[in-house]
Image 1: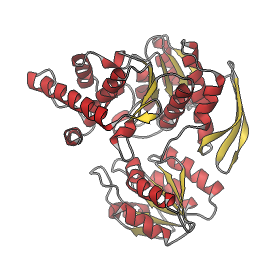
Image 2: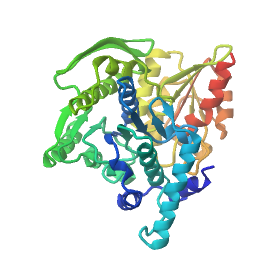
Image 3: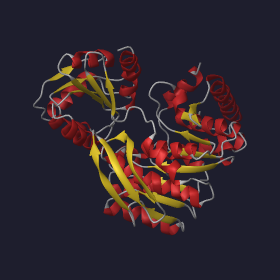
Length: 430
């Protein structure tokens, strides 16, 4: 159905706003048809996007969200209200956007074809305009300054975290990466930041100052109390604007407490901007959000436990390792597959102390590091646990289940997506 769209993946990643700007202009600027909240960050931006969207829907707002990548189905990227867009609506929007892009290419307005992400971004804006959305939560794909989503005229935004990832495109230092992410800051914007290291905070603050934006540090003037129970935060949050909880976060992991605070401050900013978001809706966004593939636990018939987490950089791997060490002292078997451009020594170095053995695999994408090469890099990183190779992700999980009662699947969204639906069907049939 979407062969024309997926064919654009051959054009790879191209940072820049020329193509998306021309495409949006030719479409009549759908990105201006709704208010938007723009969310950037190395880690946490997807979780925050999902929480904020859930809170707005609970408040009765006609809200949408655009995220990337998807796990299994393209429609996961485009959610309006509580539902993914329908297949017929998505197909129409994709065809219309690609027809427009073809016309621009033929006339010379576009010197090259749009990339897959540029096209899907335009599709999101067109879908949201046609659905008469009031507000959209838009997750940055990569970086911020030259990300295709940065054509949205957002008045509210967030930078959830800054860490080392995509250094080949964003820079080799936290300061350089922070500058790229701060590129989403518009003049007069309210921008909420998570806990940023010194040089990252300095870079973001400088951009905010230059653009006369209001910088809201999520933790400033707040108090968070609570504990982890069965891997989930049971917390109370007090901000200068309100009190929330005690409540149990829907998403597992200590790092979700930080993400929840960013989401609360964003929702408060939306409320101050004139969209009514009462406290109970904010709490609902934290306690009822669904965000698949992030510390998602699937219990299979007969007892095997499969933990899915799309940790794809060093900071994400460290957070996952901390969770495993606290809640899975049995040291699960690790099934891992990563993309070619990732810091393999850093990722596996964080995870190896928390696992008992490793099965190296690879998602079915040209960007994936081949399983045998990944295994060699894991061994070179000084692994003192058994490392096996199984190129097929589904077979890798099956092999891992023979080694222990708990399996952790991680390394990329593509890998988690390759196994999640099959595992969930087995769990439902238990």
